[in-house]
Length: 114
Image (cartoon, rainbow, N blue to C red; front, side, top):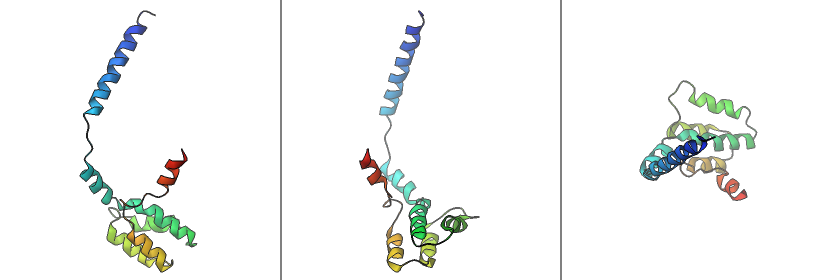
């Protein structure tokens, strides 16, 4: 029982040290933006959602075929895929205008529910 105070004291020191370290960290907004803009995989969600809305079968599998055996998705390959879809032209244009940094999905709606 006498050692409980020692354990609590070391725990408090560890928390304070952790907070001091975290307060020294700074985000690099340009690096974050560059990483996000290089991640076109993010766009699979809205494309798959639109495909399902218009009754395109196996939406997930079709997107998977787009990336299989490749290093990833880039803007050009994704735009070519969107243009090949059998969906209304207005939906194609809407999807073509989205970028990884402008697409947030339903995040704003879900955040306001809390």
